[in-house]
Amino acid sequence: MLGLEIDAVISALNSRSRRYILKVLSKFFGYPANALTLKELVLELIQDPDFKVKRRESTYKALEKLVDSGLVKKYHEEGRGMCYSMVRTRLEIDLAKGTVE
Image (cartoon, rainbow, N blue to C red):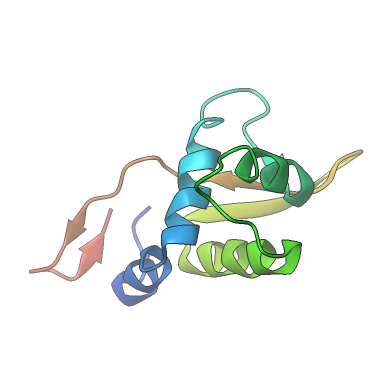
């Protein structure tokens, strides 16, 4: 996880929606099929009555911000399409050093 830009990580975490997406993805972390497609993620998100999925596109944009920060990876899986998974479930941010591990 070394090499993540602290500003990009903090910016990505500065959204309730993106943090909730990470929470949902973390439920699948460590399992053989630890990735979700956008459709599968939206289906997970709408199960929580406190979380409002306005549009699928807004979920996609949130995922892309998480991918850009390095917190989520995306890849194409044969038969499923584009999949998203967490890189790690724990982060350590050292503000004195300006590092993320």
